[in-house]
Image (tube, rainbow, N blue to C red):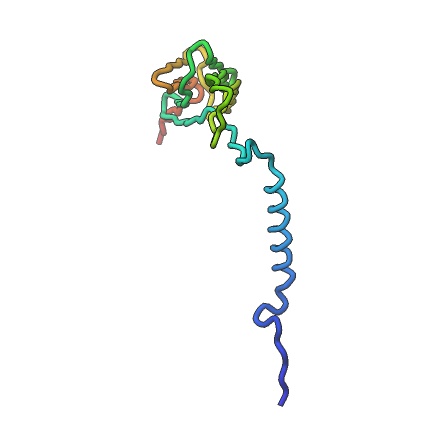
Length: 153
C-alpha cells in the first residue's frame, strides 16, 4: 500500500496565485497606511462642493450644495464645455482653548471644474442660489439638441 502525503491538497499547484494575492494585499496595505492624516483622523476626500448633473432634451442642470456661502464668495463660469464653480468658505474661529474631537468642515478656497456632457449656449446660462443650493441651468446649443429626421419612402 502506497500512502502519499498531501500537504497542500486541494490547493496544490495554486500557490503561485495565492502568493500574488498576498503580495498585492501587502502592497495595498503599505499604500493606504502611508496616506497623510489630519489631527489623527483620516483625511476627508476633499471634494467640495458636491455636484449633481442631469439633463433633459433642452438643458443641462447642475445642482451644488454650498451652505454658508454668500453670493460675493461664489463664482460660476462657463467656457466651451467646461463649467467652473469657485469660491471661498469661511468658518468662524473657535476660542483658542478649544480642543477638537473631530474636525471635518474645512475652510478655505475651493474650485470644481466639470466637463459638460454636451455643448451649451453660453449666452443663456442662468445661475440661482437659494438656501445653500446653487442651481445652474445650461441651455443646450441648437446643434446639440436631437433633431427629428423625416424618412422618405
